[in-house]
Image 1: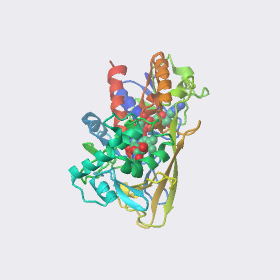
Image 2: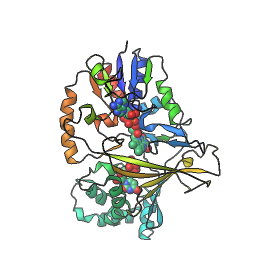
Image 3: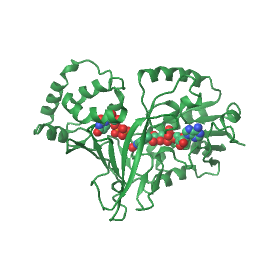
Image 4: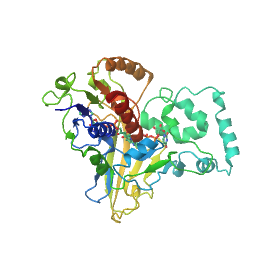
Length: 378
Ligand code: FAD
Ligand code: UDP
């Protein structure tokens, strides 16, 4: 007897399954991929032994104490602190934009107040208006020249959408600091799972009340567990794409996908840092990841390294949907999908794909914990 079917074994689905299993419910999880863990999954590169995050670099960070306590039940975290650099016109600058970036860019030696005054002057075109989109948000945060150098080209490559059509919230994630602090995240807790992501994710599913079936697509009627067979019979938590669930009835929501080009190089260290962004449009990729640097505490081979170049493009049908684009047209469609969702009996939509929202791992876990409290066990 199954008490709950969870579609998708990403962090949202795993959190729901683990919590429900712990309360004595029998949970059946399915995933269309041949591994569990969703996009946080990682694997050991066979040529070098280096841990590679298959779906792009995943850095865990949170200020949510409940989430931090919860994840620490399954893994310890290293003391890794994320820092990013960006290359613009052949010169390397620290990201996110901080006093170091500003002074290097303007060849100046401003203190915090002078730098603030300079940026305010360079953002004057907004005349105190509230930024309505990514373009205006960028200019209002850092002024036009810094925006054009570090944000405009990168964002054009990442989103291939007019920045005036993109929500301001995309770059509100990036702090701007008038100190030399170049930590990428502001959160209280940060680190990487000591034993790797996959050990963490597998531990969450390692429960006598959880069964996991991989390579099982919810929309494949030939599978014993599929939408037609299950909905209305057993409660379902669905974490796949919301538009796909309704067979695109209200039209497709737009997503961005990424192509990851992995290469093993015969050098011990390629770029000296985990993530190098490329701000200029002349370089086709957005960034290069070098995975050995995520774990300086590990004794990796010193004569080889793994790098991944990341390219971004619009997702076509069949591509992995990674980032919701969220244009005004998407938001209209989403509203109609929300009405359809409300009409689905005992189906709970969650996670990044199921709600069409950019969620970091800690947000996916936090919202799964809330779903368990408010919808599944109340
Ligand atoms: P997912 O991990 O996407 O899991 C959904 C699962 O559902 C997938 O395994 C999928 O195969 C399965 N599924 C879909 N459709 C079906 C179907 N029809 N049948 C069966 N199974 C199905 N977060 C951070 O905190 N820090 C980071 O640095 C970070 N970097 C990221 C970088 C990239 C490139 C991406 C894409 C995301 C990043 N994230 C990061 C976000 C993180 O991946 C998500 O928060 C997390 O994966 C959310 O989990 P989820 O369960 O909602 O979705
Ligand atoms: N961004 C940018 N330049 C950078 C880094 C980020 O313009 O060097 C913008 C870009 O629009 C990106 C957004 O800020 O999509 C959020 O960046 P973040 O690194 O948080 O997100 P990611 O794209 O890695 O998920």
